[in-house]
Amino acid sequence: MPSILIVDDEKSLREVLEILFSNEGFDVFTSKNVSEAITILEGNKVDVVLSDLILGKESGLDLARSVNGMGLNIPFVLITAYASPETAMESVKLGVIDYISKPFDNDKLVNMIKKLISKGEHLREIPELDEIVGNSSFVKELKKKICDVAEGDATVLLSGESGTGKELVARAIHRISKRGKNNFIAVNCGAIPSDLLESEFFGYKKGAFTGAYSDKKGLFEMASGGTIFLDEITELPLNMQVKLLRVLQERKVMKVGSSEEIDIDVRIISATNRNIDNEVDAGRFRKDLYYRINVVQIEMLPLRDRMEDIEPLAKLFLKKFSAQMGKNISEISYPVIEILKSYEYKGNVRELQNIIERGVTLEKSDRLLPGSILGYFSIKNNGHDSLLPELKVNGKVDLEKVLETVEKKYITCALNLSNNNQSKAARMLGISLRVLRYKMSKYNVK
Image (cartoon, rainbow, N blue to C red):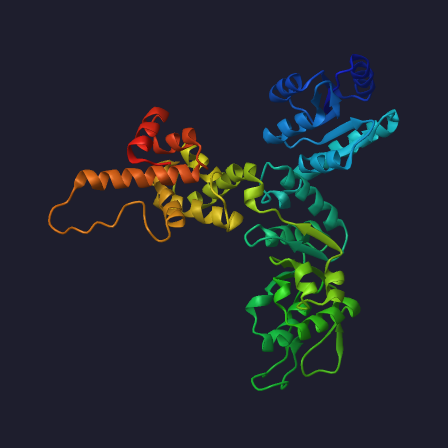
């Protein structure tokens, strides 16, 4: 039986909606405010939330924010008489799926809710999405977008910083699509020398040039029937962009040394970590090609903008590397989670994966502890210095001074990692807040 939580401060509307959805076979929960709704969500399985935008002094967005913070992957619909553009933008960021305007048609509302629940159940049944991990509203929307895009055959452009998972998304789109049983060919456009691009992309005939001792299929021909993923497409030189544009328009390729064209049936997914609009404006990327590859664009958010995804990703990587290395590390300690959440990932998900791999390699117990990962952060935060000072013994050693230097470095590092949150820093260091403040005062750490 599907379940719905109805949140409205008007008793009469709550009762009308409760009767409506009960008659449709729903298990109905009702609440008049945000705190009651959160209590219901904490103790019950809820498939969809239907909330009024205005809840007395509170807002449906307050509830959406709480649901988002709880990491609950629940479709969220707002009822409103009027939604401003600002409210609409914020609601999208918080994972709100749709609005229903007052006065609303009962049948349309019920059909909307049923479709949302059906779509959510469909997503849970798609194993190809299992590697797209996270609790953020971005990840929830990304999974839906992947499924929507996979139904068609339009070209897709994935944009975002390096390490955000663009190839992972491209593979998921391919596997879910009708082309999923055929080849997925991934190409790093920046890794192929410019003088070899044409022969690599389109193949060549025997005798086309010195060393061409037999015919060779190009990457596009190899991907025919499936998908070709052109990573870092903005690295292609302009002369190759012209040839790629023709392939997109004609769906044909011509091998180097041949005068005959070959039909290809291939879906093209491209990716770039650059601002492609800037590349077009600067004349480094053809505008006509940009329009061809940008039928559907998916922008990948950096990890620092979706911090709620860090813990589930870290646990996924822990399970992966623990199994690979034959270790029995089943948990990540609380201080490690706090350290990971306090760091800005310039390398995004790929950097988080490297940190966990390093930690699993060094860890000797059955839990990932701070000592196994702190070395990574000390290198990142102090250039190439470790947390320990370089000791040069020239006669007498002032051990007390050495220990003071070590303590001061650990305290400074913990404060940096916790964005100067002293409570978090104390937990990382395994000392009380009172002791931390005493040592900060003693060593004049600001």
